[in-house]
Amino acid sequence: MLALEIVFWLSCALIVWTQVGYAAALVLAARVRGPRSVPEPGPLPSLSLIIAAHDEEPVIAAKIANALGLDYPRDLLEVIVACDGCSDGTARAAAGAGADLVLDLERGGKIRAQDAAVQRAAGEVVAFSDANALWEPDAARLLAAAFSDPEVGYACGQVHFVQAASGADAGNQEGVYWRYEMAVRLRESQLSSITAGNGAIYATRRDSYLVVDPIMGHDLSLPFNIVKRGRRAVYVPDARATEKMVPSLGGEFARKRRMMSHTWPILLRGGMLSPRGYTPGYAVMILSHRVLRYVTPMLHVIALAANIALVAAGAGTLYLLTLAAQAAILAAAALAGLIRARPLLIARYYVLTTASPAAGLWDWLRHGTPASWEAAEGTR
Image (cartoon, rainbow, N blue to C red; front, side, top):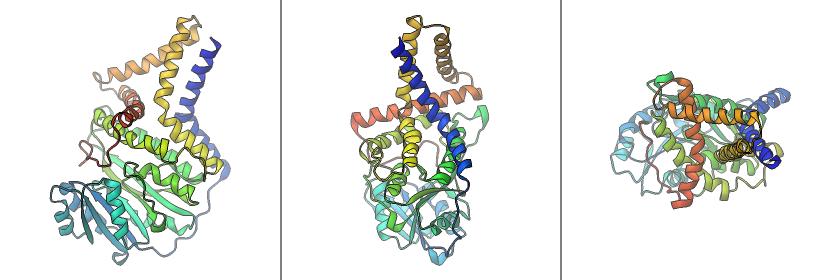
């Protein structure tokens, strides 16, 4: 019985650490360390803004207009659209909207489209955005300013997810999670480097850009790899973009499941688990915020199985209470399909998104991960 208790409490402790304890530790460490000195901004670098697009005709003109409307000197800004095997009028619409360069490529996936654009880019800094993400006017200037620090090789901004409904009327509770995630990312950046970025608004020095396996997205593969090469990956919260949220929780689960099928190859064979090139602090960040987060569904299953075994063995009232708590979370998630109350929706969001790494792992092991992608439901 002692062994079961150890397994149960260790699993619970690791779940609590990755979901709550790690963030609290970052806040404490940031207060102890104090603010990091920031170099004075230098002259703005030339910047190539790259938009990888697959069948984005409905939104690409608005995206180009948004890019050309940025508060960035026009002679320093290059807008490139990399059309990844488009079967619609994306290329024609992009050219008509004023893109500086439109690449009409064969279908090879988002990463290969971005690689092709970087090869043709003239900017000292290469920035990337999704076709449906609209940047605020000062976003490019603020993102580029991060590279005044010679230690910085990668910078990402903040995405604000928008949807028509809110509260209990909103099926997807991604906004709740994303605000928490951005708070954690800010502390990571203040202390060392971030452990992941996002695809809607980010940039690298051109000489820091890395060509990675086409199934390994930039969001996860670039930050830790740039750290391994001696530069920092930072978060610039004032550089903001907006993007439509997947409206339904089922759609969000499908999106995260697809993302996780790209994540496991990075974790298991893409170099993330190798500590070579990490500082001790950054290694703890990767373990706490990435590795443990991705194995959380397995930890939940272990904790539940150990709890059931302990109750069956007559371990006492405490384990009846912990089993009841786990059952209550699952019941709340199930009831959210019938009763659209905010706490129930959050429980459902937690259960489904926690399950998504396991589903993504299953997909990758069963049939691999394609390099190509389709737009998520309701985001265009």
